[in-house]
Amino acid sequence: MAMAAGMRRAGEVARRAGVSTDTIRHYERKGLLPRVRRSPNGYREYPEGTEQAVRLIRNALAVGFSLEELSRILAARARGEAPCRTVRALAGEKLRAMEDRLAELQDARDRLQAVLADWDARLLRTPAGQRAGLLEALTGLVEEGAPPPFLSPELRRGKRR
Image (cartoon, rainbow, N blue to C red; front, side, top):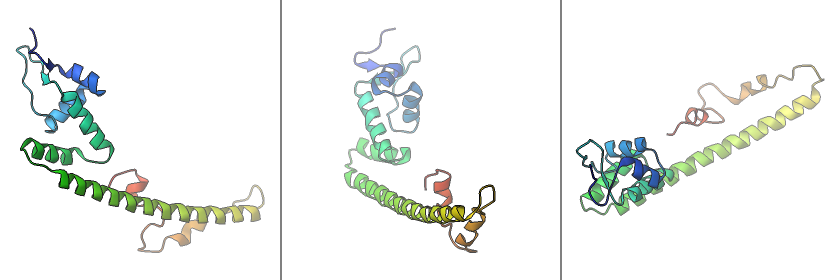
């Protein structure tokens, strides 16, 4: 069965956009790409320009936008709205969160450097083959009820906030 002029199947769109067909279908389910018609034999048929939309989504994800945020933004665009100020505000929030995480990481780096300097001094004073008590030296770093001195649990586990 012939495809309508200017239409592409998911595989072709995926290949041109550099993603998998699962990604194309996922974006459609999440509302990032409009629902498309199906050919009589059940294939999804995407209009020209879909690969540019996929690249736009990938670029926005790369700078920190979530699928949910993009879905809302793209839905507003589809309604004829201009969500540019919302996009800018969201990006500004992402930068502030990133700066907070960087400050936390820099503080953790400084503390770890101090621990390593202490450990180096302990190791110099410790005869070879004897324990220097390096892990025990960490005991005074965390006071009862105090926040962790190095990384938050989210950062230790690599999770986003």
